[in-house]
Image (tube, rainbow, N blue to C red):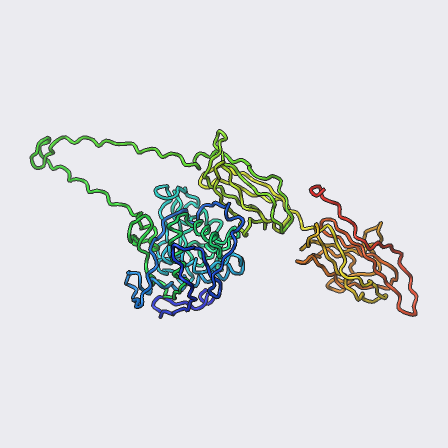
Length: 594
């Protein structure tokens, strides 16, 4: 793995200063979403169509984070790692392996989701706020945290979200409540669908910085969010932890890292000091991340009074009690009112039904689910998870198969738009209530094959050949659907006997297979991105005459072309009787189109 991710500094190695592009300072009171392109220019974009309607749960379950702010610029900063004044090299720098993971994630997202414009500095800012860069870079050579796991406090509703255990303790070692896990602090229910394998070791581990950084990048880029847009950037950060203070803190670190940072050896980074909630540094208690220590340590129990020594009861003499003690009065704890999620009894379909889309297209309607009580009353502010299940490549906009949406004032959660994959047939999208066991609601949608309703020949040269020769002109075609390019449409080409007998001919022109044998039917054909297709070369046997080539597409478009085979000059050959139309035969409309 070390070779795969390049040279890294190890603990105790010399610090290497990395050059970083300096951008204009962005005050916290100014527009926080300004980002830059590769040349340091500010860039903006229009909000994603989905951005204003999406309300989802957070990656961290709104767990604790660190509120430490970046150090102020100083003309003479100190460089020691023991100084926690905020001007140290360890505070300004990023541990080598952690920094490498952020940059690897940015490079991966640049390929898979180029429209997201994810800067690695955003991952660094979130990593700083969530875990102090994996507890100052305390990771091994493969990027996995060392020592105890970085765990957030139990999400038991006491100052945080109330999320019951979803992973049987597999990730967070807690079988009662979920906890945020790892250097990017994912809760198990989010990691279950957002987790990624960032270091190609075949596992998705939230405790590995390569896996966690890549997962965080995909999480921030979902719903086709463009992070060069202010509103999209804000929505993405708040979806990680829904707190304005959290957003402002992340933006301060993002600004800081954009101004420049440097690589420091693993394990030498400074530990975070102040967890949200006000308690100062509690990063000990054996938790390598310190996330659990900030305000979540158990207060010591008061010391019991000394037991009475033998003496005269009911007196003030030494060893005797002044009065007979009364048993303590027990006050029952106040009952906790049920949350909206607690009141959900069942789910009802509240969106479009019988949705159908052609492969590659976006479904025009959207799925929606309504949460209701036993009496049928709508329940607002409930998290509903939509999951595309089964062996399908259909996804939500942005390429994800899971989306979590909060119900609105009428109890309705509307899923993001679905994009039909290439696998055709029925697709199931399952909606469930997050944090409560309620019978799931399955929505069914249908993906149909790409199709064309018109087919035309490209070119006008006559298709002629002499016996035992090769046609000079390759047949070119263009397919369209409702006047638009029909790309990736399946095409079948057959040299037929006649218009009335569309079976394959046993003589006349032919194609060749890979072994050079004559074939008169081709099925593994498909139009390209422009709806174009060029058929393989045609050959002729020793039969002269006029023959027919019929081309058909998925969706019913048909074109029949004439092929003429002539005897070489000075010879006479028997002819094969054929008929020809050379015209496009209209496709039969489907029931949904008529």
